[in-house]
Length: 314
Image (cartoon, rainbow, N blue to C red; front, top):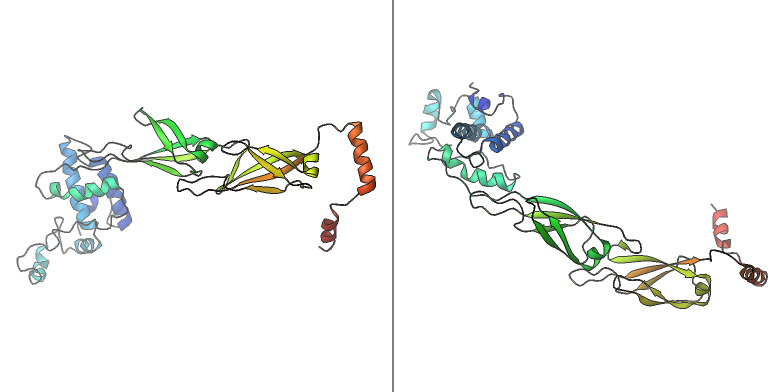
């Protein structure tokens, strides 16, 4: 059995189909005439690699080649010719038009287009340069919490040094990608340009936290606002609004501001969740200490009573 076609791809006859495909793709990147204009020797090797892959890249043809039924050009070998005459009365090679790359569906756009056009050179008609799409570019961009929530614009520098203003969609989430059509690498031979994909990283905010479409805020309140109730100002994404705190509000109580959360481009809105945090004064003066002492003597209660009962049963 000849090993000529395997040697063209730099492989031995024991190579797997996956190894053959991998070697072929690697050589295409190195030898494709569109990427090496004027390299006559490289173009000839490109044709040889292409012809080799057309046969051993196809499992059925490879099996016949390994068995000596066909030669390096795909023609029947003399000792097998009588067997094929009845299958093809003209004596033509029934596999001559098989491409051997029908399983290339997972390859990227660049090589898919190369494969569609490479047969012209391999058939001796003179290589016809293909027009194919430029490669995509990927970027990473940090944006502020408010720009992500409300939308905005941000300027980034592209691979060619050009500055481009990016429109940030309202309500975009962390890790999402913005696609810029035609802003990738230029195409070859008048092919279309690739796209730019910008992955978004949202910076944290000192006041707001995102939970899905909702926004969470921790609001400090005084002991008398918690005890007596009050109406206070609370920050939201679109400016401060009034919030009523009910009398007797406990630390950690959550109040909801309807429709004050993230607003998606489609118009869907989340809520703002306000978690109350009762804060004592930084210093307890004698007057307040006396007041608390008197109140305890008359109205003492145990807020941990139910907790301790439940713990006792564990």
